[in-house]
Image (tube, rainbow, N blue to C red; front, side, top):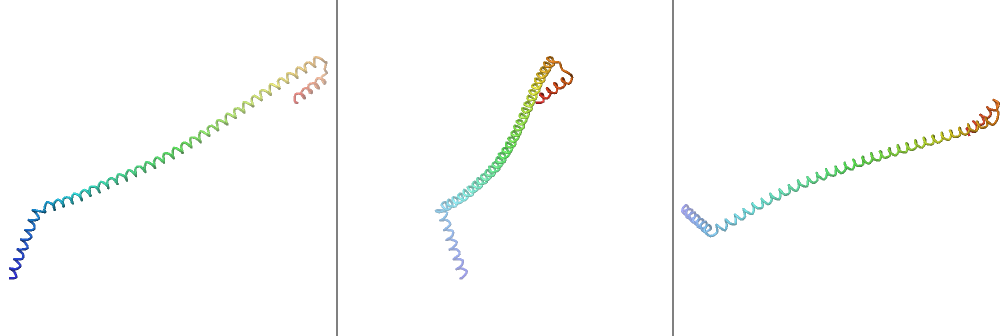
Length: 161
């Protein structure tokens, strides 16, 4: 009887399970299936959203890296331009100074030449005046060779003053 009791219990349990499944299918299966589909859709949407957020984060990181690289390059360019500008300014200042030195040197040379020409003209005038005075004195008086030499020495002494 033990086996028949087991078989009877198994039949009752199987029948109850079958009846429960039929009732579930008829009354609750659509709701359960909708809940499961809704849950699956939410999980799928969450996965898609996580992928989109991950892609967005990757794009932002790449953009940030690009901007950082561009900023570094721009800073390097600015520094190089400043160095080039400073070197150019230095070269311009050196060229201007050399030009100023050359101009002042030329001006000094011109001043020396002018002073030399004026001194030469003055000496020529003095020599001409002295020669004229000597000639006048020679013509006005008769000189002996010793007197003539004394007169020349006297005028040469005046010329040296």
